[in-house]
Structure formats: C-alpha cells, structure tokens
Amino acid sequence: MFCLPNIRRMSEQAEKARKANRRRRSFACDGCGERFNIDDCRRKNQLYFIEEWHDSLSAGIKGILYFCPRCTQTI
Ligand SMILES: [Zn+2]
Image (cartoon, rainbow, N blue to C red; front, side, top):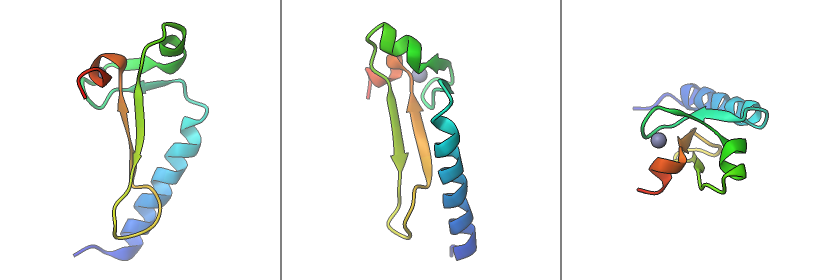
C-alpha cells in the first residue's frame, strides 16, 4: 500500500528535477548509462528521447526517462 505523503514527495522531487533539467545539457542515458549532450545531438541532427512519466494514482510527474541517440533508434 502506498503512503500518500511519500507519493507527494516523489512528485515534488520529480518536479524539482524537471526544473533543474531546464539548465542541464547533458544526461545519463537510462538505456545504456552513457552520458549524452543534447546540444551535441541538435548540432548533429540526432534524435534523443526525454519523457516524463506519470501514474494514475496522483497528479504530477513521477520521474523522467532519458535515452541517448543510439538507444532512441531502438525504441
Ligand atoms: Zn543509451
């Protein structure tokens, strides 16, 4: 059974991560673990994948997924 304040805190943390990510340009890929830089990707015209995920229990985002260009090709 989920504890509600815990879920709320998770979603607050995800919200904070999202705000911090606006300034961040490089991320660790959730597929292969390698870091990739979104400015490099844009310059090289490579696709990358950043997706917020949600659940049906509460409002707000629960986390963010990152995939580098190489892993994005295999999604
Ligand atoms: Zn990857």
